[in-house]
Image (cartoon, rainbow, N blue to C red; front, side):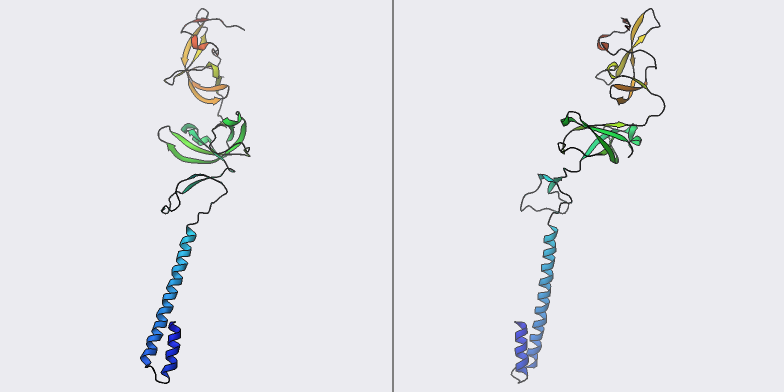
Length: 246
């Protein structure tokens, strides 16, 4: 409209029907209208960009496990709006004791047993180690990746991980059934003392190291070659006479 009025004034000024100042005023009105149009287009571009930034693009295929916001709710940058779970790439997070932290490298041999699958074992590998400890338990997070888990394994299931660590030198191992545990955390074994007349049961406090399945590694409290009781040890008394049967 401003351009039409300017063209009309330019036609009339030649016949001196309108003054020259009117033409200049209408030319200024065209420039102002063009500036307003340019600003409106920029505002529209900014609005489209802002709208596009409100689209939530999932970084991977997954399942929405939990919705944290509702439609029409105001959110800020960084506000979580949903939990997205990747069911195709599973991690297993375990807490490692601090004394074995240095041994949980990328080459550690790991097997995982999923409780829901009757203890079926799968191979796994160390994906990452988080060097921040739990101050209460003095443990560190080790993240494992299970190689080719079956479809029956889903996020949220419980599992157990078994690490095979490279030992150094000879170790002393005894059957797990020989260990007697007490509520205060003390662990003992009943050893057979043959130094007196006849064999007698002597209780010894031992220090455990690693759990090796049916056996346990001992790092103190008993020497190699000393017989230990594996059945009926809960009912023994100190110095009780025992008989070793072949």
